[in-house]
Length: 330
Image (cartoon, rainbow, N blue to C red; front, side, top):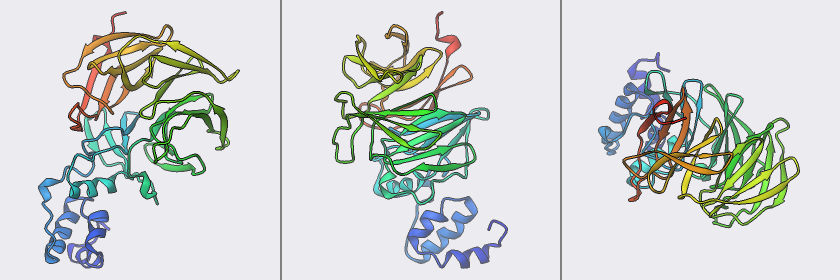
């Protein structure tokens, strides 16, 4: 359609109502936006154009999911409820799309990726994402998607309705634990999704999980589950055994596993890591602003942190970097 002249595009866009124009036309590119703006103005609908950010860039967001695929940081979903109603409507449309940050050129670019026919209840936060064979596996409510730089494929819509859960990949299986339903009922059972046969399997009850933001990491083919209590649960998929391990460090809010360490930010604004062998905490640096609901990835031996919210629940769309070469003291 980009090859069509402005008059033809104006005629085509004129068949769309205001809501459809905002959803499908206004934020595509500057040319389409100018034509749509004129049509909306004729209808008495004034859109303040400079109020909206680059449509390729995500909103200030928290509790989103990210993954590094190749040289790109892929971002999806999250919560941005601190903005006004008009912007909230705009961003709700973008939650089905994927933002892409090029880690070589250091800018946001268009992905062209979108979750087709996305259910309304997935315009929210609480999903999980894991890396699997150079792809990103998203578990959102009861849907599982496989995302690459060029595609988004629905793998299953048969799973239990679950949010704020923890997920890891061990031996071609995505293990999932904790979280809540949409009604905030605790999910206390462990399941796995076989990434080969695409079938869910129930393991059974494990232990009461915290309602909010349980997370996990995989180390030596075991699943370590942290649910904001003074312990970590170690689950062994081979014999289905569960060990409760006491810990003594400040609360943390999720992170990323890398070379035997789990990098995260504590409630004391400390960027550091859990040593996955002895489950002790090491502080690397104090970050200037407390962040919760952020995402952390590792690329080129560098921590890439995106989004999150401060203690006043003001959200961020910043990308922060912390080179490990200058932080780790080995």
